[in-house]
Length: 422
Image (cartoon, rainbow, N blue to C red):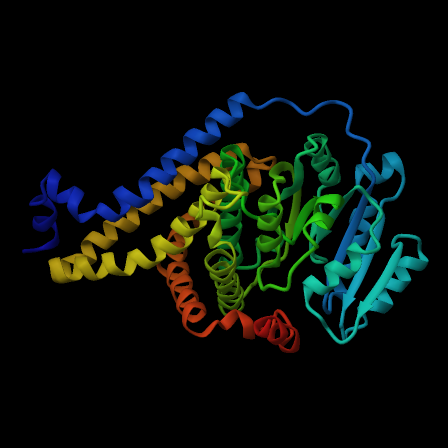
């Protein structure tokens, strides 16, 4: 039986049976996401004309970021809030750099663009740098950003209306890819950021289950961060602090107009290393640290937190673990014709990704730039389905069996070993 004959022989019940993974797991999340965003956009109210009168501090923590620091700080000086009210408090923390980052920061301080320069020596990891910097922040709102991040001129202004609600503890900004044109790997990530951050966080925000304020660009109510004791030492310190705030009763929001660009890995090796770290951190934070969210006997039990946890566990862990079983089941059932079915599944993913991409691009501020990525969408589908899913599976295994996140160089070994022993 050739491929065409095989496909022609499939009736509707067999079709549902063979494609059960996509029908049961994937199709609903795309449809639900589209419906949620459509309803949220229809119900959306424009921001108030007068921005809340919050004071703002910006905290920049980095290791060996001398080359990027000048551009980042000058971008902050160009913010509309700085031109309107006067310069924001800017604090730079050098986390044990060896490239002269502190010297660059001192020059910017002399020029009046940085208020305070602090140095952690030896390197203590980003959490240590953030906590040190927070101790000197005076603003009601603290914006934490990576030093390789650049900002739209009104990005920080876009955060402030959300904090008019006293229950809001943190607001996530929208991140795009600055080095998008470097190669296929960066273009794939640009599409990924557009779908998973620009669109995905809109959906999570509308459902009240947003579970991460990215450490690359996010705003925090200083009193809220103080109430949960700052950041813990984790590989995924941004997700960890977000969940600490949620558990303390603070609301987490997403500001789609607070736009910034970040530099992403340009090599496959760099991308794999980054994603292994991210995924291992997901296992540690969600399975080990916050699994108690599901316990209804806890005094702080909330359905919104349950939704946030299940969202992560289902889409990042469950689907990853089930997919290899689906592939094996197809092979045992169909033999070589399993390849045909998997090809059809990949084509189906491409169609769903096209719909998600179109929705995300239509909601973006720079639609023209977004649509230029359309020719690379098939590459994105292949990367997400074939490559990223297996990277996530490897990371889950590494973390569950060997607790690999506790040996990741992102946090110095001497620091993480103390946490592991605690």
